[in-house]
Image (cartoon, rainbow, N blue to C red; front, side, top):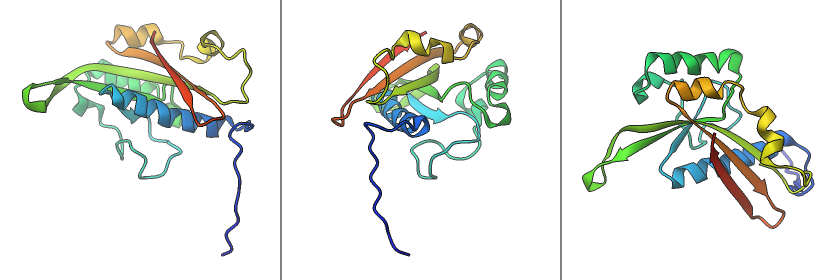
Length: 164
């Protein structure tokens, strides 16, 4: 096989899936730095097997979720579609650096804009894409986070996170 070099111009790409995948990796790191362990939601995910998320089918019952929460998550992933990008768990810290029971459970939606995005890209502009059932999720005990990642053409980015 002959290898060909391909140059990806991230500053000019219009491939929203590619930009979104980069934003999700940045959001994953952002959450991990805050001791929130993010996992994929649903069975379909376009990342390689060694992507830094739990592998295999989600077993939400083991994470301390109640029956209503589990059913809600299953309903959000019918036919391989996801309403949120991640589910995140933050556990209590115990003496000696040990980790305790789940303190908070987060549903996370990530929105990413690359350098070629319109300057009108704002939180207001992405609100219509957020799942409509946020109030239902919150009533079940989930905390809902919106993470906005803005990529710049100098290898820097900004990350803003807001609890909805």
